[in-house]
Image (tube, rainbow, N blue to C red):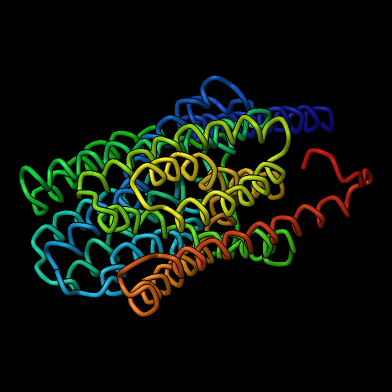
Length: 444
């Protein structure tokens, strides 16, 4: 009888073990068929380029709107709202960036908790609605609410999952993957700028906004289908990744992001008006933005390659210092259009590397499964910087440059970029100080 009971218990144990194993397999299969892709794959696999390229295409629409806003800005300032101050009109472009980045501390947490695709599709709907509603607006405050706030909020839902996908899928080639993905923002700036200018000239600004809305709905709607995670997010109770805020690395990256977004957008928003002051046409302003974005495509990919070889922090520090050296003399001393083209080409290649390298730096020092949340928290400071910087630049241009030059605006921009470089130098020192190898010249 005892032997029989033992056999029954043994059979139950075997059956229970088999049932648990089957449950585990089923759970794994469900995860594999979900946002983690067809199977859970190792980093640096070829499959990782599929979601990375989907991010690149979506970046065309997320950042294309802000990168090409200079076209709308020139149109609003010189045609539709003549007499309206630059500082007032700058609210539209400022709020796109502010809400896109500033709200990503919440949308990033939502992406990690509820899924990348759901978050991205909310963004697609909001961005499309923003364009369509903006096309019916006849007052600046209406455009601030639609083209500014609503689009920026929608872009935040798209941006938060996008920024964390390439670093998840790559380790050895993390810089290159991030650079390729972020190059989409400059590619978007290229064709967004050219297409927007052409549509404004041919069918008017209202229909230009409607066409951009339709394109955003169709293209991002398809690309969102390919938003796969490599590994599932860890379950957590808190909305924010509060542990990250206890580390100095987080605060230094956040401060650098704030400083860069405070000074970065001056050239994008005002290069068209500079061209007009030097005797150029609206088309010249559009062409300068094309050159700026073309340079950015090359620069962001090269920055990723260089970062993989020499270190992301080393590469970012060098690019920030070069940005100041390029921006101040070429813009301040320009007396014709030719120096402006040189400025846009060089500035485009060097300055925006922080957009592709910041996610690499964060992913190198924080867990990739919470990357959307941590990047969202650092981007909160980016959004604040974009708002502060663009508004202050508008006031400086109105009050001190008096719509006749950009000297004071340029100095303001360059000093914040220089400050960002000093912060990254401090981050480099902080990381080396914690290492066993404390050589000054090393990959960081």
